[in-house]
Each structure stands twice: as C-alpha cells, then as structure tokens.
Image (cartoon, rainbow, N blue to C red; front, side, top):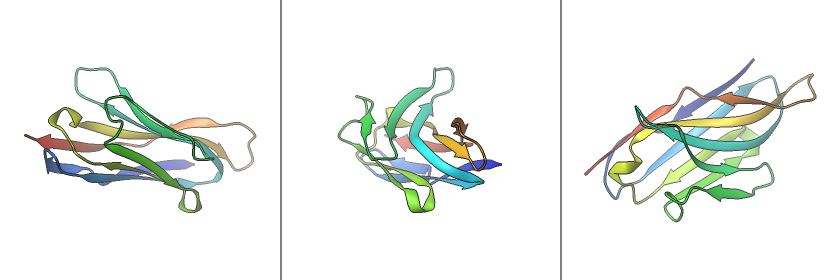
Length: 121
C-alpha cells in the first residue's frame, strides 16, 4: 500500500505565503516525478509544478516566479512554497507521485487527498 498525505493548506491574505507538503509512505521502492495540481470547483484540474527525482523542475506560467517546488528524497516528500499569493490561487491542491512499489518493476501514479488553500483579497 502507498499513501500520499498533503498538509500546510489554510487561509491567507493576498500577498502572503504558504508552504504545502506531501509525504509518501508505504511499500515504496522508488519515487519518480512528483507534481502539484490544483482544482477550483466547476473547473478542470490545473497542473501547477513538477520535479523529477533528479531535480528537473517545471512550472505553470500562472505560478512561475511565485511558487517553488522542491523535494527531499530521504523522506519521500515534495514541497510547494507559495509566495505572493493571489485570490485566484485559491483552490484544492493535490500532489501526484510516480511510485514503484517494492517487488514491482513499474511505476504507477498515486494521488493525495488534497488540501484547501484560500487566499482572501
């Protein structure tokens, strides 16, 4: 079994910062790319940022320069530092990770349960 658990969401004023964490646990052999997505009710899920195991990073244009993704492979955790937050950043944030479980030779995508971020104007 593999589990991803996000934390760090909450309510913040525009211009403020939040740091999200997503920790993977379970029978994990290896973790590939880890990513953050967000969803606003009634809208499609939006990709936010991703980081490979080797540290290659990509961002959506909407968050570039304000958000920073990082990961700590030793504790199987990905982070999203969100600065200069805007009301339009309000959404449910999810993490996704490509994980190879112990005893297998292929990767599957796993999702966390999400955490709410609300930015007030």
